[in-house]
Amino acid sequence: MNELISKVRGWASTAGLIGPNGKATVASQHRKLIQERKEVDDALESGTDTELALEIGDEIVCLIVLAERCGLTFEDCLLGAYEKISNRTGKMVGETYVKD
Image (tube, rainbow, N blue to C red; front, top):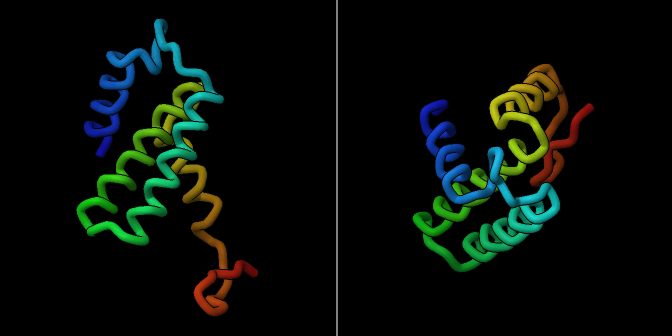
């Protein structure tokens, strides 16, 4: 997984999104993430599993780039989120998990 994330970073650097010559801003990358979120929504409504997987992947790429633009790493963000939820308790209420 780390190798794949490194490949995404390499692509983003070559594309001019991140790195010393990166032109993407936090705001522009956040807008791109919102756009990709809408594409995930569309794929959930009318797409195939293949399309949905591609759109979720695009959203993950945007998150990796957004983290980099914020001076963070995707891995650290994911680890922090996991540590936050790992001991969380709660229950399902209908279709929603409600934490205690």
